[in-house]
Length: 267
Image 1 (tube, rainbow, N blue to C red):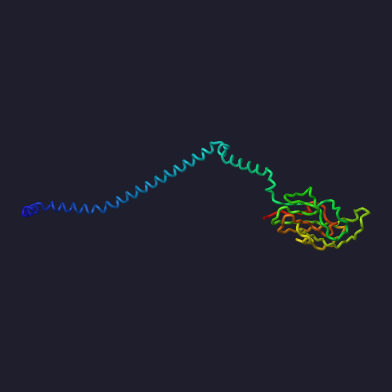
Image 2: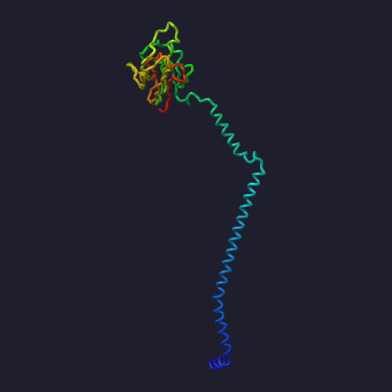
C-alpha cells in the first residue's frame, strides 16, 4: 500500500501542486472578504436607522397635523366645553358661598365705631380728658356690645385694639355771640388714651395706650392733627374698652377721621 501511494505521488505531482495553490488562494481570499462583509453590514445598519428615523418623523408630523386640524375644524365652543363648564361651576359655587350669609357662630368678634356727631357732650375750652361717645347706629358690631362709650367683649381671646382721633381748631369768629371767647392762638395738649376696664375690677381702669403731642394752633388758619394707635391685648369676657382725649371740644366730627374698634385674632 505504501508503495502504491508513493507511485501515485510520483505520477501526479501536478495535482499536488494544484491542490496547494487552491489552498493558498482560499486563505488569501478570506482577508479580502471580511472588510467587504463588514462594510455591507454597516451600510445596511445605517440605512435601517435612517429609514426608522424618517418613518418616526413622518408619523409625528402626521399626528401633529391631524391633532391641530381636528381642533381647528371643531367649533370653539365644542373644544372648550369641558374646561369652561368646570370653571363656570366653580365660579358659581364661589358666588353662592360668598352670597350666603355666615351664621353668628362663624363671625369673628369685631367692632368698628365712628365718632358720634354732633359732639354735644363736652364744653368748649374744657381741657380735662373726656370719654368719647361713638355712633353705634353707623358702626359694626359682631359678638361685641357697646354701651355708654365702651366696647364690651363677649368672647375672651387675643384682640387687636385700635383708635384714631382727629383734632381741629374751629374759627371762633364764626361761632354765635353766646359762645365763650377764646384766644386767637392756642397751645393745646392733644392726647389720646385707650383704657381697659376689667369686669371684675373695682379700682380705676388701666391705660392700655397713650399717645399725643402739644400743638400751637391759630384760629385764622386751618389746623388739624390726628392721632392713631393700635396694639394686641389679651381680653376676657365682660372686659370694657373706651377712649379718652384731652381738649375733646376740638374733636373733628367726621366719621372718616375719628373711630374706635377691635377684632379678635386668636384664642
